[in-house]
Image 1 (cartoon, rainbow, N blue to C red):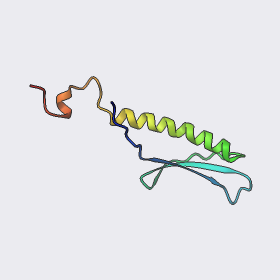
Image 2: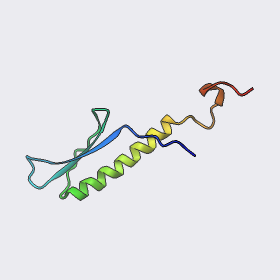
Image 3: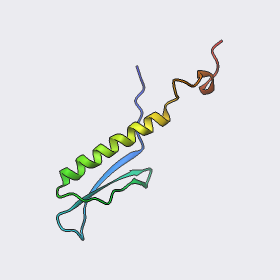
Length: 82
């Protein structure tokens, strides 16, 4: 069974106070903004769906970078099998 790993990202969705009726999303990673588009959305749900799509892509990239490559010899990640 594969161990579950928690990703370091948080999706924030907020109303823009200076833009009545507009919503905005940003993805944070460990307390720092990792991605923040300039686009705003008419509804909370539109912003949530757009942010969730971007979050899913960031998680996929993060998992790919975090996982050892299948092409890399296993001994680089631990003791060699003897």
